[in-house]
Amino acid sequence: MHLHQHDAATHADFTVSAGDRVPFVFTHHASHLPRPDSVVADDALAGTESFWAEWIAQCRYDGRWPEAVRRALITLKALTYAPTGGILAAATTSLPEQLGGTRNWDYRYCWLRDATFTLQALIGTGFTTEAREWREWLVRAVAGDPADLQIMYGLDGARGLTETTLDWLSGYEGSAPVRVGNAAADQFQLDVWGEVLDGLHLVREAGLPVFHTAWDLQRGLLDFLEGHWDQPDNSLWEVRGPRRQFVHSKVMAWAGVDRAVRTVERHGLVGPTQSWCRLRDRIHADVCAHGYDADRGTFTQFYGSRGLDAALLLIPRVGFLPWSDPRVRGTIEAVRTHLAHDGFVRRYDTDADGCVDGLPGGEGSFLACTFWLADALHGIGRTDEARRLFEKVLALRNDVGLLSEEYDATLGRQIGNVPQAFSMVGLVNTARHLEGTPITTHTNPGLPDLVHLVP
Image 1 (tube, one colour):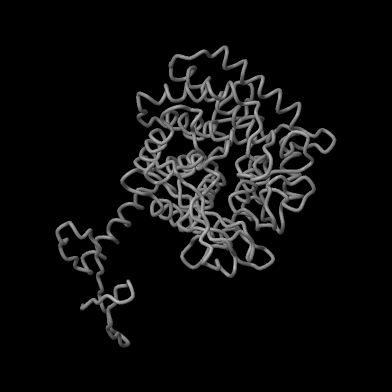
Image 2: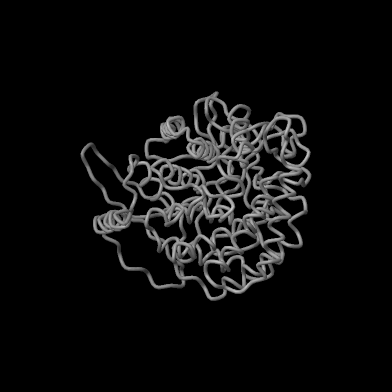
């Protein structure tokens, strides 16, 4: 095929008629390197098909939604950068959370928070190689001073993610600005320390080999938590308003300390467990005293708030309280009543008085949160309702089985960046949970109904 340059682009002209099959290979290489060998298109296609068929054949999931789960796992693999094991949050930037709005973010990075959920999905379906590589990326990325921990990094572990806008672009369906980089990388989000500790604990519980430096890293993260757990933060939702004492952030700080205690107890590593137990109890008491609204029977978004947060659905899942606790059941019902629209769950109410996200406009329902509600309904015994909600979300997938970040129930369309790893991970984990896999990540002698996520 003859190629020619015009207006800083490469062109080729050829004709395709009905029934024709025209292979076209376009190969890039640096000008100072030798020209690469030619690629035979049919061989390359056959090799690609063989790779994916062999890879997905490792899947151990045998439940009632095999097509959806396998498609989600393939998507997670496709979002993985092979040289480092890092997994993108999404493959796109600036696809809006509200059409015509300004909530347009660059998601082409690796979020630490996603690590635990992703590890659950991969380990639980038999993909231990990918789980190990993702864990190794995680350890490399966060190594160093725990005070310098970022919530996200580049695929190669890069820390500089300066946010800029491309003002000459009008944005998707007029949704400007278009952004490159993400300023949330510089935020303080307390829950991330807990998520990293939880993820590394999950790897140990699953029996995967652990870096010899991993425990030293965890000890450093715990030292930071001990001195900073009571500080306000920007929350997992990366709010750009004032920092607050977000309940979910405190719960995850508790979870991080709890996992350290269990690591010492179960795996024989050395650590000041008595001090950590006291810290764990102190955080627990603080959350129950200041983050729970007894009059309404629900936990709140942050201390002193009357708002709700879909992340509160994770309180029993991380073992902070058992599913049978009336405070858990009250919180699940409050979220279902006030944050769900036709079953689809918003992260929080952007229109409420006292909303602290610091942004104009609204957004759609968050698909990961909708999966969390299905998990929660299953956790309190409403499994039929949970399955109906799960299948309702499955029906939103596009023609190749992908989910974006959010869903606009009014417009009846997916919105936000796509494919969204958080949504695909939620699909896999909820499918497993509804088949009977326990949905709490550890055991707790004081909470007898909690069981291991990974046998």
